[in-house]
Length: 81
Image (cartoon, rainbow, N blue to C red):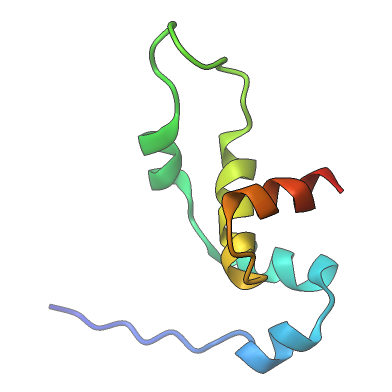
């Protein structure tokens, strides 16, 4: 088995010191969420509308962890504001 070592682009301290407008693109540019999108994307006609922005929902869950937002309800309030 091969082991590939990737050097870090920025430290966690640098990310925390940046404003969210600067730090979130740095984090999300390195993430590949295509496998997550395949799992959560809707394939059936019945149920929730198909025009939902699933990638934005996934990113908001990551932001919830980064910003230490305790509940989904609090995340929804934050997104509305």
